[in-house]
Amino acid sequence: MKATITKVGGFFRAVEVQGIAAVPGSYQVQFSSQLESSSNPQEWKNNFALILTKEDLTTLRDVCGAALAVGD
Image (cartoon, rainbow, N blue to C red):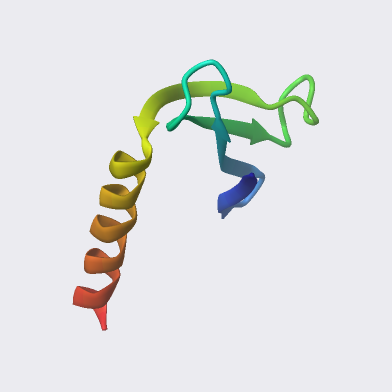
């Protein structure tokens, strides 16, 4: 699953989460960006990636939820 998480002017940041078939229960979390004013504006650049377990993803979800709850 890939989703754009930031849109500022002509800059976009996306995150993609994919299961790793060779390592059941593990997921690659890839962050990438795109800049409309670049020489190839349709190209996504990989910024960084993480390998996380299902438990790690659940922790990340909970941390994001807690941060959002503080803002309410």
